[in-house]
Length: 245
Length: 287
Image (cartoon, rainbow over all chains, first blue to last red; front, side):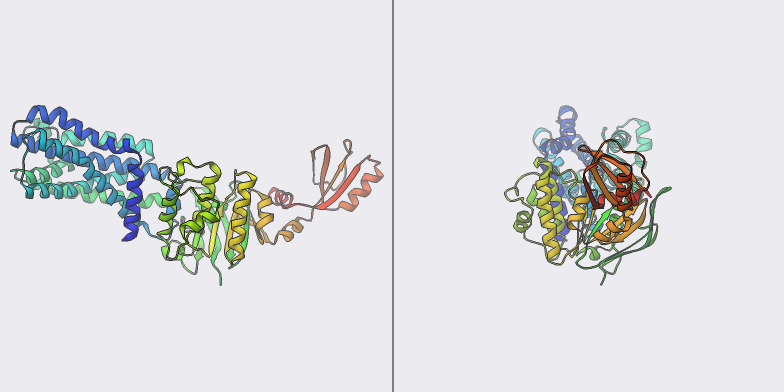
């Protein structure tokens, strides 16, 4: 366990020493809150709450897709990475440390979103709702963590960045993150339940407000989580032996 | 007791054959120089022995087990060929990170002192000079009080002073009974440090012996002199020129001198000596 924390500390130090990287992951959701949620839903408590929950899901998705996708790909290109694999520890502590560091960074990127929601909009939820929401954010983080890891272990840095960028926007838009519940264009409503972003955001909506979960979305979130997990495991194993072909 | 062993190991990368049936034993207290041109398979062999790669066929054991089992790596240290320290981390943090993996690591201060890195604890590794980075990555190999260290071209690209700091540290480790596998292009380095030399060429072990034996193996002597251009002489393996002197490699220096005299070549300052390891090495790998 202490090795997991050693690795987590190592990753966090690396990230925090480049403050612009921290800023980068918090900028998009913060800006979206300020430009879209505050002016358009500011006075409507339910609308502002759901919109905030959507932005939190959005932040969770981007920070994990990019954090792991680009982070892992960049680390793999450094000779330090194979060096650490010769130390007397299996992949577990390094993996665990990376995930803990990723969760910490995700939480950090949520802070401005929640602060803006609390002070600049009419959004409100109960303490239980907030705690459930944080729990939902962790659950929602899992499939995107796996996707990020799959991208990072399968692709070189530049390709990883491109793929993460290509993936995140359609997932956000088609999953309905950019519209209020049941107010997305009809084709979005039709495909959304099959995308992991939808299940994730529905968990968030149900946690902080009055929203009945749709079983299809939640089941599909589970399917995506398992599939992304398998893909990440495949990419990790494939990476072990073939890196320097 | 064998610390590390490779038995008839081959390793392919796709269609390319990096190692073709290599066997090697590393015993306690040995300081082995692993020599060979670029692409001979030196780094691949090191990567197999430390568990980074699996052999395509053959077996590799480290402290009696599979090097891919983390517990087997508790008593080794490694300096990879490339220096890839995490640029934003401080020197002390890198040492601590590595130390956290070992049961009984050296004190941080002791590690830094041994490698002349005192006073750099708080520096980010990205701000170190090339020599300091290299010293730190060699130092990391010794953090876990290893019984066997793998140093993959530890002094490539370093100036003489830094090189000697590292040599002293390697000698000190060896003097305390530690075993070393050192790959190098620098033959002076291998001659200065190694007790045993393994020459690798095109994925095969070409020779495995003591430094004098490797030198004697090719049985070539170097005859050098100041002279005008020479006529064709029998038994000359190669000719080179430097500092106004001609250097001839020959298996039979006595006959060569007789031939020079009978051909009335106007030579001065004749010198005959056994080949250096470098010359022996070129002979072996060219064959």
